[in-house]
Length: 434
Ligand SMILES: NC(=O)N[C@@H](CC(=O)O)C(=O)O
Ligand SMILES: [Zn+2]
Ligand SMILES: [Zn+2]
Image (cartoon, rainbow, N blue to C red; front, top):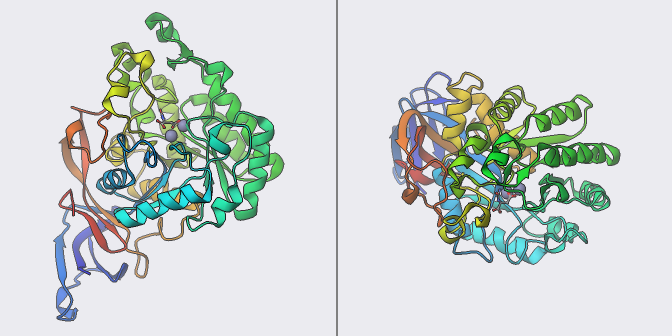
């Protein structure tokens, strides 16, 4: 395996130093390292990383890889290639596949496909209920005990709306230190809903999706998690009220964590006026006030992490009229740039804060040991080299995803992932897959 000597890199914005990545770990760290001391049989590649920042490999707690079942939209291989290009070394693959990941067999299949592809570690999320039907609990214990070691359980795409089932799931996952990741959407309040409920939805004639449909479930679940003493994670928080509720739950000392998605930080519901379904997503794009509350919540730690909710859809499911189109947008290859633009360049988060929200905290919530570790001697060499000074125009056709539904096509974004290392192996070099 190639050894990499990374010269003059700024680890999380600190003074430039050198990193030696060998045998899968950060073997040496400090200024003035040279390849000379390495044995002659070893192949050492030197990377001039002047101007680049080293971040711990990013961890996504919320990715849709679509395999098994919708390999026309994404596969484990194509999705993890996109992940590596975005600086991720680990992703949690959501359970809303066909068949649903509700048994040990399916989660082991997804886990193994991730291993075989080798771009990024894949941690399958297990479904909470059989077939995501919201009627009976799935075999959570069998998935936890499987080779995939599932710790995150979610019916994402659907809400576990039955309070008794949600309570039992929260109780059940305590046995193996799991967490229930809730897609908070009160189904009756969102029947037929197409976009954020507000003055604009009325004007556009699209059925509204009220903030209370999200907030009511989050409040209920925080209370349930506290009642049974379990861990709750809230997926894709999108409203200012939701941020307030999570802040309140944390102030009580309850074990509640929450994520925000890049698109909810930067895009708003006014884009629905284009009637272009590229902007159709669940939960919907909200108001500028909501986006600002998410950024503030992310800055002060109320929102623990950024998760992509990368949701690939083939063009026939997106290039149609708004009401008929699928919900969801791509996210893996643009997440870090959006966080740079909305949080770092805006002076609200430094690179250590980014590492916490996109690597350390998601790894902690998902109970992933090999990822989300600070870059230090002895740590697994899961590292991203990032150029914050670069600028690029997003081209939908350039994505590694099998789908093209990025809402950022044609937009100029800051930053570029130059290299990604998974246990010391380069998955991306010079901004390209190896
Ligand atoms: N976010 C979305 O709009 N869509 C997701 C489902 C989900 O995350 O709820 C999908 O699977 O396509
Ligand atoms: Zn969801
Ligand atoms: Zn999702």
